[in-house]
Length: 451
Image 1 (cartoon, rainbow, N blue to C red):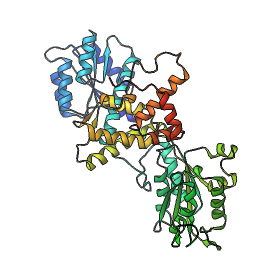
Image 2: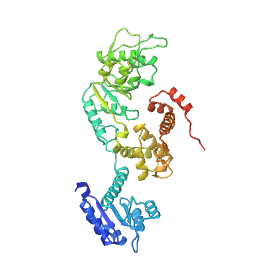
Image 3: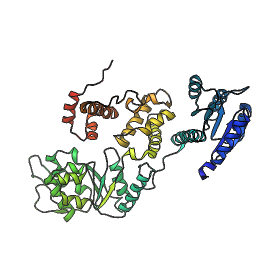
Image 4: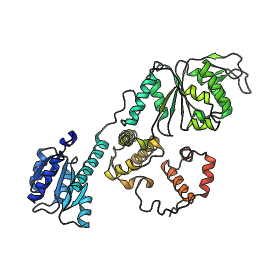
């Protein structure tokens, strides 16, 4: 008997004493607390008197039937789940029960295992809904905005804590949208350097011709247009932390210069003859496998080992299923407050679709979708049809095993584009191709008809 089962209270309602005896015996043997009632009127009184997690009710009962009891529960006891059983199974009865809010529908006679499975499914759905509606996000004390309670994220938090106690270089790896900069900020602001600057640099967003002068600064007259001496980002980060995002996008010559900074703690401003000493911590990040780039001679092995003193790998959202609802709750509250809209409530079917989605864009994609739902929804309730099409079940999706490689690729490209609101730059990042390649592929994609 599990401790969690002991806390679950189930109310069984049926006008058949034999059925009640069967339910009570089997469910008690499973560890649940069980109360029985021979009719809906008595059951309603029990619900008023005692906290109940699940009601298992017969459909056909004298005076007040199971559907009426179900509707009463839905309108008066929002935290109680309902499972319908009946000896007169029919499609219409099942449809009506589900439409009225029953989590499970079980036809008599049923086996013990069928009963246990249905009860566990109903209770799991209840827990999912309660987590989404009631449980506030519980970030790690040092998380600084990083939301998560999964085992994978606990490892990240532990690594952040240990990294913050040191000044050694850190290499953060993870897919796009997983929150690498948030982790870098958490390391910095929990370290002894927290009162000094945190300077984030997107190495892939600065043209190669400008990157050296931006990072290291330049002296007056170093090149045409250098009218004054200007400090670079490394000098700006003095005493603090410089965050080199997309470190894999730097050229080999720039990698040599960065290696020198790590080794000597000195930078040469463009046009200068003498180096300048710098005191800052370097945190780098990449969404690519640097070991593979080393094998292709696209990244220096010596720089990799200099950066990879402390490694923090951020898991993709699809490996942190239990964090999806926490993040959903966090972003729902955030954007409801920002846009002065009601906090959305998600139906079980919507929650199931969100939890089952692959999340190619990770946390950034989830945030984007919640923001859009808050803005566009007419009411406070979000159901599965309100979600993007690629998240919803389709009986025609992926039909036929004999599809060409081009068809599979087209479907994936369109799915990624849909997930990022047709942002081609973001889609290219997720697909790990450049925008030019994406444009060429889109020319060959049969875009869906707007009719």
